[in-house]
Structure formats: structure tokens, C-alpha cells
Image (cartoon, rainbow over all chains, first blue to last red; front, side):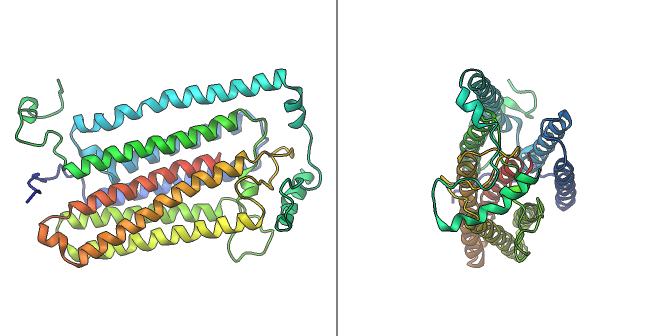
Length: 151
Length: 225
């Protein structure tokens, strides 16, 4: 009999807590979607668009927190145990910063020193994207391209 | 060293589980941590490529279709929000199953597990429809029919990352559904009643919540921003 771990759960809230977290997650998702819809008609490089994207990312992190803390019950574990999970994940802060910075820097370098790359990203495709794959089923690409041409 | 634990010396003095977590559950946590790094690597790589490119397709143009709607319908975000809610609700039913397990309520476990499985299958069906639809629009690994937001030609990076990452996530959902079905069968066979606890449901639950957690990130990175 291996199950001798006394599981007198450090139990949190119960059903009430589940309902509360469900409501919070739904509300956060709805706000995210509302922001997403709002963003559709925003000009591309506007700072407002960037701010909305930032807000969506913050909401995403809040959702992640609620799922991990309450649904996965991490909040009610012992602190030492929480730390063995959360501290390694802090590496992500560095990963994200370093890689995105690197990607951005690469784009700037190419825009400065690679005329072909720069040129490619200014030519608008009028009709439909030429199919490098040349298959018949790729005909449906047209509507998207036409919509683009209107803009 | 810790200040939060009640009696630190006794906790680590041997003879009891210092984390007060069952072995299998702890190992599930560490597995999920490694899995988080895998998904993180995928998503960060996607972000890096996106940051190093001048243009990128507009998700509201790419993901604008809806099942049974006429061709050319413009319904951005609608279908994917349904998928998101399906996953959130199935996560809730999973919590309820774990909760019922705590109370040794076999009926509650069975009911909520079935609901969770149904939710998982519904999500997979939605994804299958979406993949099929995109495939028929000409999107696949190595082929991208969509244009960038500003009307310039787009690279295949967009579709490559989309299919790889949502595919990897979908595979996780599929595994989760299989695990949940096994849990359901074990519950119906009274395995957990004989053991005297439903800790196994908790481990399956952790995995299922993780799948939901990853979707929060995938959803944001691909469909919203």
C-alpha cells in the first residue's frame, strides 16, 4: 500500500472558489476578445494598437495565474514546493527579452544592409500571392488578396 | 531557511513528505514544467521570427471563417472564441471532477469526467474543422496563401509556425482526452474506490489544466495580437 501520504489537503475554497475563478476567467476572456475586436480597425503602426496588445498580454498573464494558482491548486501547496516550480520558470523572462530583442535587431540590420529584403517588404501584391507550389487547390487564395487590394 | 512552512525542521527531518505532495503529483508538476519550456521555446521562436520580419498576416483576415457560414463571411475571432470557451469550461468540469474525487463522490467524478472528455473532443473537432478549412484555402506547412497586413507578400513562416504550434497543442489535447478516458474507465471499474483515494484524477487534472493554460498563450499569440 503506497498511498500513505496523508492527504489532508491544504484545501482552498471548494466549489465557491471554482465558481469565482470560472467567472474571472470568462470575464478576462471577454475583455480580451473585446480588445481584439476593437483592434481590428486600428491603424497598423499606431501606438494605441501597441498599447492594446500590451493590455491583452497582461490579461493573458492574469488568466495564466488564475489557472495555475486555483485550478491547478498551486496556491494551496507549500511554499517550498511552489518555489521549485516557479523559480525555474523565471528563466522565461530572460528568454523572451533576449530572443525578441535579437529578432528585432536582425530586422533592423536587414532593413539597413539588405536592399533586397527591404524592397521585398514594400512591394504590394495586387492580385493573388503567386503560388510557389502551383497546385490547383490553392485557387481560393484570391478573396484574401482582393480584400487586401481594396485597403 | 523557509519562513512560510509551519515547522521547517520537522518537515525536512525525514519520515514525512516535505512538500506534502504525493510523489506522482510532484513528478507531474515537473513534467509540466519541462513541457512549459517546450511550448515556451516554440512560442518564443515564433515571436523572434515575427520580430525579425517586416510584415505579418492579419489574424482577423486569416481566421475569419465559421462552419456552415457562407463562403467569404467575415467573422474574425468568433470561431476561436468558441474554442477558447469550450476549453475553459472543460477545465472547470475537470476541477469539479477533482473536487468530487476529494469527497470520494464517484458519481460526481464520472459525470464531470464525461463532460470534460466531451469538451476535449469538441475542441479537437473545432480544430480539425479549422485546419481542414485552412488547408483548402491553400495554407499548409510550406505554403502560405495569405498576404501581409500591409498587402505585401508573406513568407511561409506564418503557416509553418501556426500548424506546428497548434498541432503540438492539439496533440496534447488528444493525449489529455485519452488520459481522461482511461481515468473514466478506472473510475467505473472502482479502482479508486479500492485504493481509497482519487489522487490519480488530480494528476490527470493537472495535465488537463496545463493544456488549457497553453491554449491561453497560443490563442493570444496567434489569434489576438
